[in-house]
Image (tube, rainbow, N blue to C red):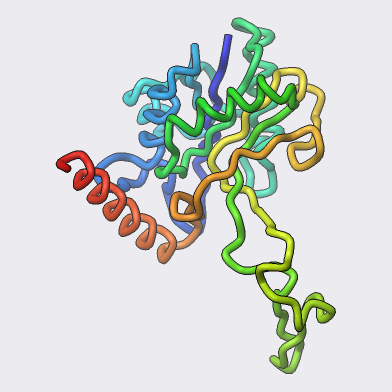
Length: 236
């Protein structure tokens, strides 16, 4: 059995009700549920939430909500990993134990079902514990700047001041879309960011953090632009 787990707690503060706020006409979480369903990878697409309103929306869009997440796993300081592990343990104990589990973020409207399927292919082909989505930084991190207490500029790595951008090693960051993992890796608390994980590289234009109102507005504009581009290609 393959399981998708979508973590969606109810206490978002920077964007209230972020997980179920309408994004281009549908609750935000509905886009993630649909991408997981359309990937064809999963026997169950489950939402882990502490919020009954989120649970009702998730079920309306076809996800399973077999439990409400305990309060100790629903505050601002709890990371993704223990939430997914809790869901995995629930299925192993009270339902059918999954072989592979994919954590799908609830606020990932650019998630493509093709990427989810490819992530599973990578996990199986590489024999990794995890396979997850990353994208490249737009500028070399070796030339990053900091501001000191006087607002003066300093380089993090001044030894790279004269280096050409094309000569510096590319760097990547978590795309915040999905983490495929073997059940044993989730249950044994293996580290996602480490040599036991394989990267699935996504283009930067399909990766957008949504943590502020400005992020939300930018994401909606980008989403509509991508939809328009897809429609234009379909008519050609």
